[in-house]
Image (cartoon, rainbow, N blue to C red; front, top):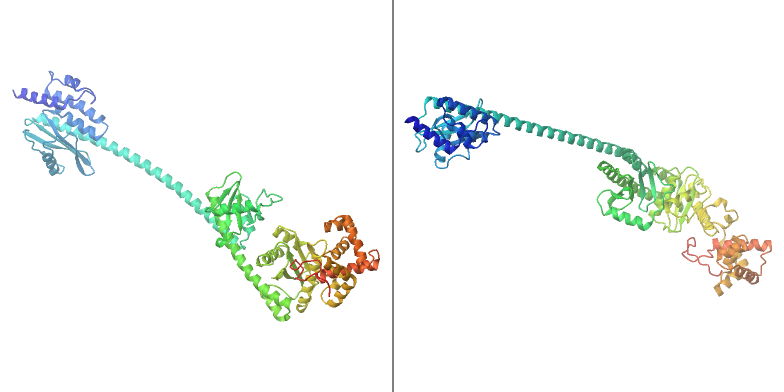
Length: 609
């Protein structure tokens, strides 16, 4: 009768909880019931067989939760047991299985936690026997299995239950170890990946720091060498491998380092150049425009020019951009410093030259010149520069100073209202200064006068007058633009400083008075026509072209000149005196130019009195 009741209870538990399929937990429960149906073998042997099948399933389960679920689901394989609850240890806490019953969950939970890892009885209403069994591994408690029975289990049944608990705990240990192994493998992979990333970042940082160090070292060398445009482009080319160049704000090339320099360098278009500067100024840092990376050289907001890299193949990376920006900043600072020095030097030079031109004692002048690095003890020349499209301001004075330095002229410099004055310690080359200024200004329309040599400081004011005379003669000649030396003026030297002005006026009045009076009364240009005729060597065609009149008009004017003046142009004496008179009228007395015209010095070309 007891055996029949046990079998009925066992049957009820099996029907409620299900049975273990042979070799797998995945078969339908009816198959399991068919195979686990009582046979002629003993109940113990039958239980052991079922536990063996369950053990296989436990060790094949995918995770700890599945293992606990199987153990709870098939606890009846060990005897007349029902699983009331199951727990897994997670991070030091016992987490109940989702299969736990809800009726007695609170009391069972409380009791299990009171056991603190030990096995012990559990009271469940309606169940005469209940026990909480720890699922222990070698090193830790994996959880609990709480089972009940309608009667106290026999020793054999308890032994089977203990076997099931050991197998479940062993399966949990294996699953836990596998999970730890997977987690460790994933963590190891993560750490290796993180290490590789950090190593790559470290390599990048080291490379970045190394490149920046190289940039700073090279730029420090530039600063130490003076920090000019040539030093900046040379260093930038060496650092990046790309051609580097500096242009002024007007687009004229100042320096180029590397291959591919255009020859001749293209003449900039003012409108496009201005648009480009404004486009770059609106951005932060270097800007790509066609095949160039361009950075502004802009100290204190004033654009002095551009520093650029030619990058036709678009090879520039962030290191290249960094080097360009750094070089542009350094060049801007260097040029601002050079400009400040130039302004101070120009002021000191100007004060000294002003005193030299006005007349000063040699001792103090020589001492002051030594202070600015110039030797006044040598023979000197006075040079006067006038450019048609440039006002004689500080900017043009600096331009003249740069041009003079570029051709090796050692000079002191000042400016006047309409020209720049240099005191140089060697005879200037016939055209070097004019060529250098033509490159600087972009036009050849300039005139230079050079004095005779001065061997003493007190002689400099007189030499200044000679330079002015040479400039004036050049301005009134057929070729207005170029360089004229006073000691090459020939006859015109006698018309220079020291000539008696009244005697000259009398001479001009004698030979040209009638023509000057005629021009004044009739608003004609007879004297100018005669002057141009002599300047063109008596050539009718050239004279007509220079006066922009027809050849027949020229013949008529020359005939009228003969009639008005009473002089014969074919006569050698008359011709010589008339030519000298026109020169005196034009150069000394300011004839032929309106007041305010370059070289006129405000003099009028009115009739002689």
